[in-house]
Image: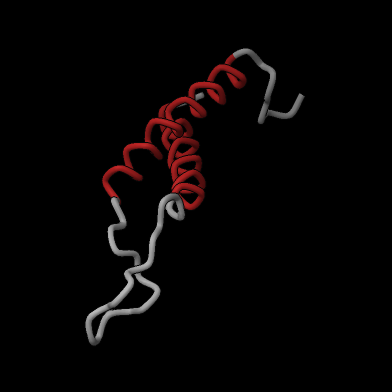
Length: 78
């Protein structure tokens, strides 16, 4: 796997994991102020979610890299 394809695979994995991590621990604010969305989370903790997403993505990217380099997955025609 080349550098460019490795980055592309990592970015795709990262975005997929981010969308699965975003709903974790979301609590709605009980009494939102005027002008605030009623469904908006009280404390979204985005930095924690970005960190968890990056850690999980790194592990999954490592598994994908190993599978591609071991020729378990091939993107080239025979």
